[in-house]
Length: 411
Image (tube, rainbow, N blue to C red):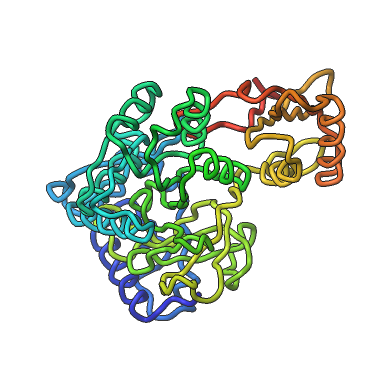
């Protein structure tokens, strides 16, 4: 998907503003000899930006406007390392609200809906993003934030909320609790807008079936506004990305070369009109592809496929490079197992070991199933893991993002 002349002009304007302001990012561009951009070829030669660049700018080195124009900061949800602080102007917040409102409209949400918000508020962008979009839409929100599942379910029943916003992990936890308590007939949910973590087909199907709702996959990251820069539509054929606010590329994560539409690679985003902390060619490390052609829904916004993983989540064990997505693809072929799994890596007696924990119901032979899964994983990645079968509900559920890989080799 080639950058348009209109998008090029906006990028050129951003570069000139950044270099004249001389913030952390502007200085890096100037050091790289970048003064502007006037063609698609020049754009492809612009340097990438990485999360480490943003960490190096801590706390407010990314600020590209006078401080009195900053109305808010947000921070990425990572728990390790120096945090990334992103400043927002009033216009940035308004633009984000417009995009998020657009997400709700694409999902068929109206001002007659009641929106149940479970993602976190505060420095994290999720909760307040869902709130901003709903208020612009004119819909009633029930802004609970994360945690207190008893309260969540009580409010869901009492307020008759029709739209659930959540991570896939928490949506699954709520679905299981509703089933366990036998209150499905008291729940009025019609739609779920789910995001913030990669989720496979198995968990999608479980949430859709157990809650009896339509689900929409929302995309975004704190560095680029937050969730709400794209969403799937009723066709369920990829997520539309709002290219009037961000320019989308897919690159080969190893070479940095731009890939043609249809090929899987790393998502790279450029903010076109952001004021507080514009970013040029920001490497997200999310793996997807641009889906060629227009969507049957009639929208001209480009589409990306579901996020299949991250370029930086590779596991190296026994000399083999393994991605969690590969394990997930194997497990999806076994109807006996649930959507939940864990991968644990350990080092004992000079050897690395991979243990895979999966859930199933009590009606199957655990040993026989474990052997079949282990054989299928070996055929996929080249070595045999230890597979442990546990009953449904044994693996932890999360109110935020569920950790699925635990590397205990160096603890």
